[in-house]
Image (cartoon, rainbow, N blue to C red):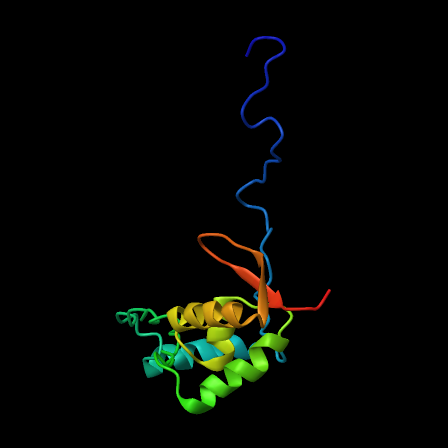
Length: 138
């Protein structure tokens, strides 16, 4: 070795082959050694036999209930439209459709009729969604 270099075994203590440096036999633990016994029993019974696992089945997802809204007014629904809708603070075709269980196209037609009678007034009109409110005298 050149000066300043260390050998590969420099920090390792050497033990002669004839020395009596044996470890005592391992003692069995009386209180916590059940897990190895349980594992041995399961392996013997075949629960961990290493067979092919079942393939995961994918769920179909959440399904929404199909609503059956009316496409034409019956007498009771039309009466509710005339009496209840002009009292709503916010009136849109989707709100009328949801509360009266009618089709949205029917709700749009009914809004035009309520506008013609002067029971509701337009707040904001847009091609996608129109917003109405109850007619006030002010």
